[in-house]
Image 1 (cartoon, helix red, strand yellow):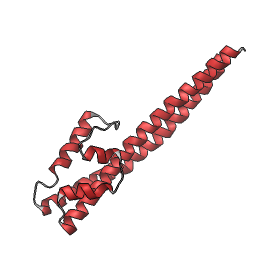
Image 2 (cartoon, helix red, strand yellow; image 1 turned 135 degrees about the vertical axis):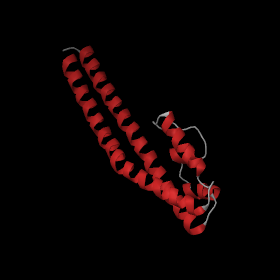
Image 3 (cartoon, one colour; image 1 turned 45 degrees about the vertical axis):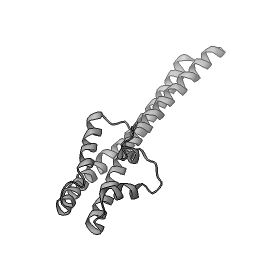
Image 4 (spheres, one colour; image 1 turned 60 degrees about the vertical axis):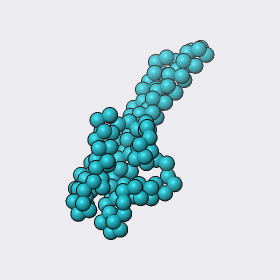
Length: 151
């Protein structure tokens, strides 16, 4: 047991822990994006149905000084959220269709999409959070095993 092997073991441990943190953060960002998307749809539905607010004003009033990845996506900026191009295109297509029909049809469409997203959010977003913690713990365990094998 020399200094080089201890150093290599510590490096392996920290490398594995960093990979675990990266995976956990990636899944949490994905869950946060979908939760923010759901929050926006609920907000838009309320504003359209009660105040008959135009879509541009809804988008402007939604953020309230926050700079989340979803809000940047909403403004058309490039985001680094861990979603596939197909998922981002699908979300973008739906968001661009808001405000193109009459208010009653739009409210019904938003209500249906909100219900669909709520089911998804309850199931998948909870799974993303749980899996992120699991991946972190597994990577830390892998790091400990690597440390023991190296040292």
